[in-house]
Length: 473
Image (cartoon, rainbow, N blue to C red; front, side, top):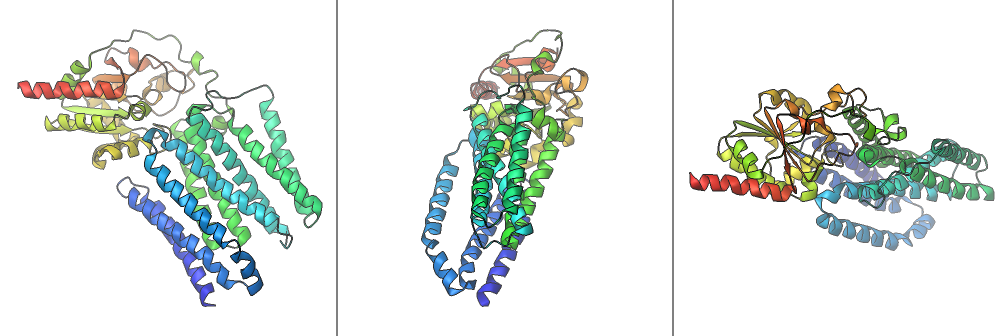
């Protein structure tokens, strides 16, 4: 009886820690402590699951004790690998890691469902139906997240599309649901086991087929969606197991993932169905029309000196900054500007990088103070009164076509108003287009100059130019 009360209290404590940790993650200032708090909640939840052993009858306890060693080995192996890999992962590979871990969560929920479905003593009915739904969502999240990882990691470089693909995907999904319904109706018979196996094959296949045609530019939204799927699957399996901690944690993760997915879709001015089914990128290259003017380039040293003598600078980081691993050198440059009484701010677009918060984490790693980092809605009105906007490795999020060109696939997407600054410098490797494939008309404007080269090398030259100027003064 005491163990039962402790288990219940542990589940409640874990749920409180999950919710409190998630709340802390809403701000970059408290995000780290929020992650630690949620991690402690997970430890409490895992510990509580072992206490369940003491609430069972002797025969059942003896049966479960035989698997206790395997559970401990799994915890040590998984925790050890995550600790080691988490310490080695590069910032540019963080989105891929998040996709994999998210897929593991969905796979875990599907595995729990598989165990429950194999239990012949399962009462069936509503609980069995809920278990199948959780298994479906978890399986889709597993294979879909793996495909998302492969796309982000460059293992799959192009979307796979063919005629009749949507019809085929719809048939697979409907057939999988029909098989689940048949398995519920035949519960307790040998045929139900066979149907359950076919059901899992269909669910896993649908996750792959659903994700393959989606372009790489939409992977951040897809990862967020699968995160919501994983949370929902965990919540449903928690209901099937009558485990309050799993239910609460799943609902919190599912709702947070859903809200984040919708926020990101709105930030791109696109609906979720558009992200999943529009074949975004097929017509992108045709958008944008004729571009007026020509690109002009400048030397890194000249750009740096101009910023040194400016009164205000807004920096817009993009994925190119992460690829070049130039965040430390960027902050060194920022400190030199601040020492010269230049007002420096950072502007972050909601979908900059490869996942939500990617740029915030990148800047935090370099030690950039949180109080000079601003979200798009909080800083856009400052651009018309800003001397210089410095764009590093960003493209679509500063493309004025989103405001003016109704034929552009990014039309209507909220952007950072970098083009409204008095002078714009863009650090870019070459004249290539962004993920959407749309030509950026900002690069052709009279107030914009391109600084070609790797961000790390360019910023190194900028730093040196400002230092040489200070030494000569």
